[in-house]
Each structure stands twice: as structure tokens, then as C-alpha cells.
Length: 160
Picture (cartoon, rainbow, N blue to C red):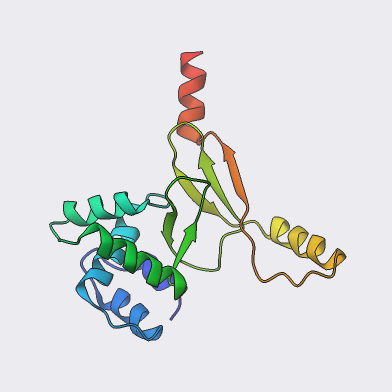
């Protein structure tokens, strides 16, 4: 199933999410659909959510799910490749609905914690060259950029 369909799905249209689960051999259970809706609708600008934020988004929609259920579904969906999981040190993992090819890097704001994925062909190509130089067979990568998001950077300039 083309990933572009996820972005254009209407908020209450479960057909696309159901098809996505079925394409990966997963049954479209209510809790799986709740988690996918939370990731699709709750993460701004290709952003990511923590498991607690996913739970809050589910409850805000009026749906019900326990925290252990959400963690189990997030793990299953990440293992199946429907969503991406990023581990940032000792804190909670971040989860994002995969809307296309894997991201080149994840930008994480040091001030507000917002995380957002980005694509960069030049970075991907450079990482492939680095791996080839040492005869390493690269199967994927995670690059995490730490700094300030545009909103926090602008707020810092205003207060300075």
C-alpha cells in the first residue's frame, strides 16, 4: 500500500488504516486502530509521540485503551514496519507513523522535546559511502540531531 494514502486519509476514515494493517498480515483490532489514529492525527508536522502522548490522544478522542495495551501495540506496529520507533537514551521511545521511506534523521528540540523526522538524500548517500569504505553492509541508520526547533529558537531570540 502506498504510504501517501495515510497522509490524505480523512480523520474518521478507518479504511486506509485497516488496509495498512491487513497488508502487513495484522488484524485491524480497535486498539490497533486507536493507536494508528493517535499517531496519524496527534503528531504535528511529521512529529513523533511518546507512549504516554499516544494514550492521551486516544482518551481525548473518547476511545479507551490501557497503558500496557498501548505499549504492546506500539511494539507490534514498530516490529511490523508500520511505525518507526526511536530510542533517545534513558527516556521513553518516540513513535511515528511511517508515511514514506524511512527518515534520514530525527530532529529533537532540547527545550520543548518536540521530535520531527526529515529526509535528506545527501546525508543518506554520505552514510552509504562511509559504510562502503569499511566494507560494512548498511541495512539502515538512525541519525539524531539535537538543537532548537524553530519555535524555541524564535522564542529565545525574543527573550534575549
